[in-house]
Length: 90
Image (cartoon, rainbow, N blue to C red; front, top):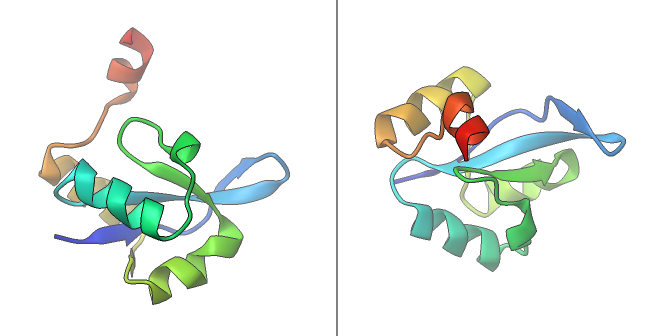
């Protein structure tokens, strides 16, 4: 079980954002986020959006820094991935 974070590449609100996920359990993800001050409003169905200035701190707290490709691969393998189609449908 691991918490993963990718490179901040997604622009919004004047900054870049990364994704924070679990490779096994949403409860693990929520617990890690809460313990590290990441607000629940940052959760988007299968990941948290976190600003670029949090990357170093979250890695120091135990998140594994991986590429975006690796993050998606492991999220799909976990069965937790919500597809774009699923997002559109509801």
